Length: 296
Image (cartoon, rainbow, N blue to C red; front, side, top):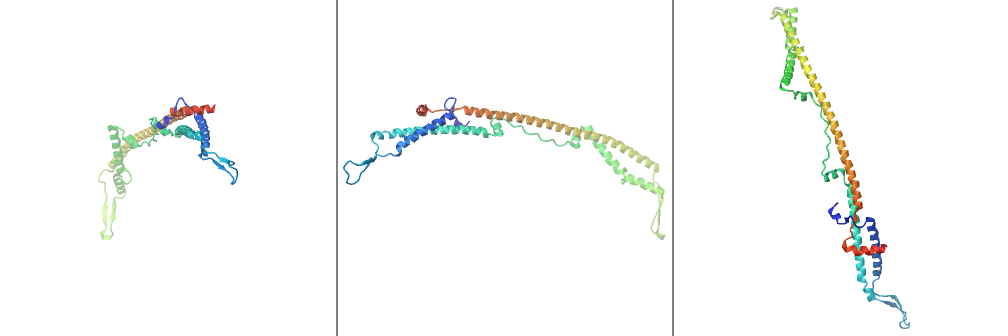
């Protein structure tokens, strides 16, 4: 409750209904007093017809005599005290309504801030774990082996695959063995080339198939590592998603728990404020007692 509103209330005093009722009575008292002062005059007026007998005129307005004059101040004091009583009760009722509205309008976030409660933050959806992420977690031996296998695969493949230097040289050897001679030019300027193997063709075949075998063995080991890395990445992604779901559920439960506390606080606070009684200041005590008697 705002400090400026606390002075109006305590556990003992008037309910808002009683305060409003007494204020209505005070307004009736004010109306009665104002009616007496409305036609205030200090002049008595008589009216007569010219030529009529003396003292035969009729009184049309009677001015206040001394007795009535003495009532002016008490009447004004009564009006002032009643207005003061109404003003106090009106402000008190307004303050209570303001407090009730403040509680009703306070948002969940504002309530958490006032209570020093930190709202649980929503967990972030995890990013997919990449194979590179798993590779970065390998120890020195495993990571070096992976890079070695990749290097061997790339190097051998570059030479023995179709279009590679070794593959092209092997193919050339096989073609030249079938056609050991070739010509270039025409007539007398024709050049004849004789092609002979510079190395035993079988040895070339042996080396080629040996390289192929090495490449296949290397590929198998590399593929096994890649498969294992892929599975680890998939497993890590699934674990992260599962953890995210659990964290999200915990966040929802915590949020719901806090929101329930917030709604309970609203109900309890509204009830507490509604039960508060309006204090009657000492200066207004006499006015209150007079109004209370009029109510009876």
